[in-house]
Image (cartoon, rainbow, N blue to C red; front, side, top):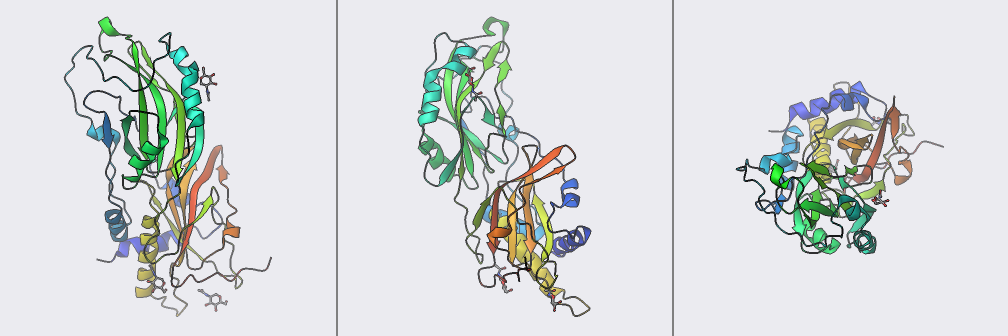
Length: 367
Ligand SMILES: *[C@@H]1O[C@H](CO)[C@@H](O)[C@H](O)[C@H]1NC(C)=O
Ligand SMILES: *[C@@H]1O[C@H](CO)[C@@H](O)[C@H](O)[C@H]1NC(C)=O
Ligand SMILES: *[C@@H]1O[C@H](CO)[C@@H](O)[C@H](O)[C@H]1NC(C)=O
C-alpha cells in the first residue's frame, strides 16, 4: 500500500521548481483557498463545541496519500433549530458595563486590565494582548465558555484537545435573549468569556473579527489575547524540532554544487501537525529507495524538512512542508517571506527536523 502517486507527485514538483530558495509558486497556485470559519454564537444548546482530530490517523493518511483527515468546518456541528422568538440566552460570567452599550463595552477598563494582567501559561507564548477582535486562524477546533478569564484554564482545555496548538481568549458582548424578532431587536447584554481553539497560530494579523450585528444588537469583543503552543511533538525517528519563528530555510546548492531540495507538500486541512511532514519525508525516502535512478546516480532520500504555516496577506495558505536530502543548520533560515505582485507571503511557526539516525548534514558552500 506504499504510495506510488505521492512520491511521483514529489518527483514532479521537484522538477517543476528546482529553485530551493523560493516559495514554490507552482505548488501554491495549485491550491484552493481555505474558507474562513464563523465561530458559532453562544446559546443554550452550544456552550461548548470542539472538533476532534486524530494525529496518528492523519499521519497514516499522509503516508497513504499525503492527505490529512480530521477537521470539518464549524458549521457542520450546528443543527437547524426551531425559531423560538426572543429565547433567553445563558448568562455569561463576565461583568456588564454601565451604560450597557457597545461603546461602553469596548472602553470598559476591567476588560483591558484583565487582559493586560493575564499570565502566559507555561508551554505557550503570548502573540497579542488586549485587542478588540477575535481570530480567524488556521484549523478551527471549537470553543468553550469559561466561568472566569483564565488563560491557564483555556490552555489546559487546549492541551486536552488533540491538535490544538493555539487559543484565543476574550470577552464577548452577547444578547440576553435571542434578538430574532422586532420585539427584542436590541436586548440587554451579557458578557461571555470565550476560549477558542485553533490548530494553527493566532496572531494580530488574523485577529480580524470585531463582532457582528444580530438584528439591532451589536456583538463586540474586548480584552482579546492570543497564545500559541511551543510544545511540538517530536515525530518518531526524527530529531527534536528546532523552532525558526517566521523564517524558512533558504538552502543554496551544497559545496559540490548539488541541489538538496526534493520538493514540497502543502497541507490544507486539519491542524498544523509536524508529524504530517515527517510522514511525507519518510514516504519520499521509501519511494526513492524503491526506485533508484536508472543512470546509476546517487539515490536522493529525504533526511530533513522545514515545515511552517505559509500566510498570504495574513491569511493561512496551508502548512508548507519542504523536503531535503541533507540537513541545513538554523543559520540558513533567511527567507522571511516574499512579495508576489501585491501579495505578501509570510512564514509563521517554522520548524526544522532531521532524521534522528542519519541527519546527513549538508556540505556547506564556501561563503
Ligand atoms: C478598543 O476599543 C477602545 C474603545 O473604543 C479603544 O480605546 C482601544 O484603542 C481599542 N483597542 C484596539 C487595540 O484597537
Ligand atoms: C532515517 O534515515 C535512515 C537512513 O537513510 C533510514 O533507514 C530511516 O528509515 C530514516 N528514518 C525515518 C524515520 O524515516
Ligand atoms: C553531489 O556531487 C558530487 C560531486 O559532483 C557527486 O559525486 C555526488 O554523487 C552528488 N551527490 C548527490 C547526492 O547527488
